[in-house]
Length: 114
Length: 112
Image: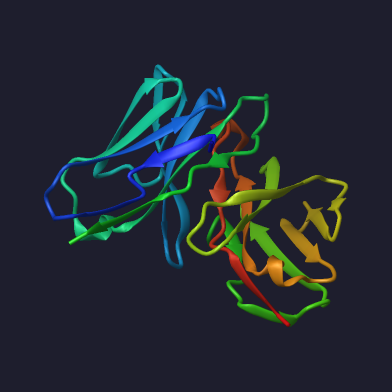
C-alpha cells in the first residue's frame, strides 16, 4: 500500500463549487504540505503544517483553506473553485530531523475547473 | 530573478551518453539541496541529496558550488529509463524550516 494517498485522483468541477482534496499518510510523519503544479511554473507551496495545531500559508494560499484533522490527515479545500485553479495538486510529508529533509509525495490529484 | 533556476531543456541524448544539468539559486544562505526526479504525470521522488563535498550514487553525481550558488547533476551512461524531468530543490531560507523551493525542472529524453 502507498504511504501517502490522495483522493480523488481526478476531479472535474464547475466554477463556484466547493471542493475538498484529501491526503492521508501512514509514514507517521509530523509535517505535511500541499503543492500545486502548473506547466512551466513548477511546484508551488499552498499550505503546510508542522503538526496538528500548526497551519501556515505558503506562497499561493489565496482561494484555498486547509484542515489538519489528525497527524495522518491533511485536507485542502477550494472554497469557490475558479478555472485558474485547474492544476495538478500534490500532498507531501516529511519527518522533522533538525534540518530540511526528504519529502514524500502522494500520487497527485488532477483537478479541472470548468 | 527566480529563487531556483534551471534550463528547461529538453536534453535529447543517446543511450550511453553523459549529460549534466545545472541549477542556480538566489539566496546565499540556503542550507539544503536536493535533486528530485519526476516522470510524466507522476509525483516527484527524491533522487539524491546534495552535500557540500559532492556525492555520488551509482551513475549519478551531484555537486554544490556555494561561491557561485549553483548545483549540478551528472548522469553517466544514460539509460532509456533515465528519461524524466529532473527538479532542482533548495531550502532557500533556513529560518523557514522544512520549506522547499522547487525549480521548474529540466527534461531529459534518452533515445535508443
